[in-house]
Length: 260
Ligand SMILES: CC(C)(COP(=O)(O)OP(=O)(O)OC[C@H]1O[C@@H](n2cnc3c(N)ncnc32)[C@H](O)[C@@H]1OP(=O)(O)O)[C@@H](O)C(=O)NCCC(=O)NCCS
Image (cartoon, rainbow, N blue to C red; front, side, top):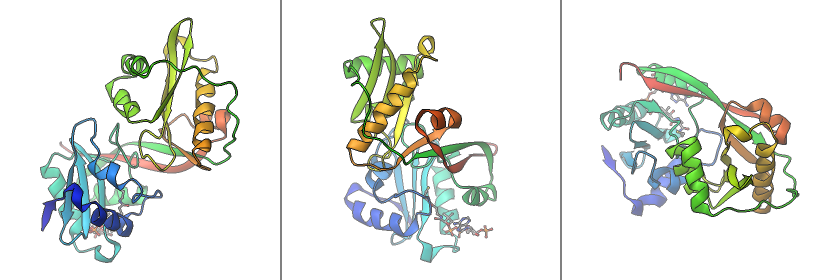
């Protein structure tokens, strides 16, 4: 009933995701990245129910995706896929650092998990910027990618480095001869237009460097053809409102399995 899926079945998987996704972003567009892309904890497992009626993607202790075809719901498929995911190690719902579709689930969906032994641990937000401008101001000087990745790992940890490594472009700013800050875009959920991760080293905060990077990344996303950009998984709503006019677009609940 529930089996592993191989990369050669991507088109079936993509179609299923189209029939099953209720989240407010295009999951079909990022199907390959979400189903077959590595996470910080290694390669994901992709499990499908029956004849592509439902799907679960797990990576380490995270449930990255759980979705059941709308015409096959309320028959126990979602519960069966969740129990199967648990047997593979799932304890946390969505919110997989480094490779996530949404940083949690909607309040509505959270109830499904609460009834099945999970409890809320946190809430977070995805912001939206829809007033993108073409001009980014003076161009940013680029430091060698390897040096920036080293800076990211040293200042913000190995998971952010993992996520940043997946970005086509990394911007950075140097101060007093050393890298002080970075920003990335199109790192996670490539093709949906999203910003981040980004970070300014502690001694350089409060000088407007972060804002310059946000605006440079947004201008680059505009050049790539995006008119709307998501700033995912952030609590800094006021900061992004002031910096680039971002507003809260969706709220998410993160859950963990009780007694796990
Ligand atoms: C949540 C979901 C997986 C449940 O699948 P399912 O096969 O219908 O689940 P089951 O038959 O095992 O369980 C049915 C329960 O889910 C509830 N449910 C079904 N769809 C739901 C939804 N969209 N939101 C909240 N609860 C839902 C039913 O009310 C029922 O609740 P009950 O336990 O109180 O009776 C399915 O609704 C779904 O795929 N939703 C969209 C998920 C999504 O967008 N995933 C992509 C991002 S990860």
